[in-house]
Length: 97
Image (cartoon, rainbow, N blue to C red; front, side, top):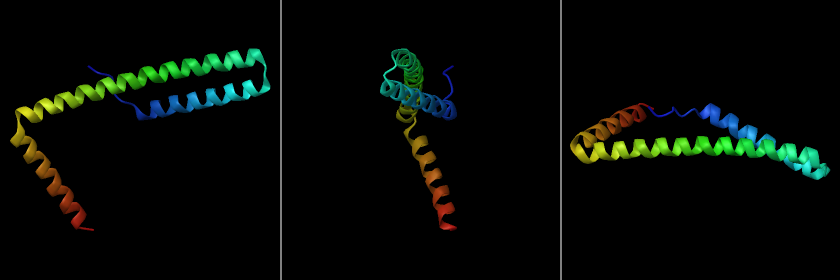
């Protein structure tokens, strides 16, 4: 089973990456080699983890898109009926406003 997409975790990881990048910039400005190396290491770790998560999400979305494409190709009239039903419901809901 594929991992579930967790937008909150992804947002937290992006915030961590930004925070580490900011620390790297501050450390670079201070020109302290030890601080710069530590900040660079943390930024690289965050970036590596984020890339892995984005690759997992991309792989999962591609798999789901392929499964949906296969279903629609094998059941075109069912897909048309489902889309029509959803469009009807959305039209009814928007018409009430």
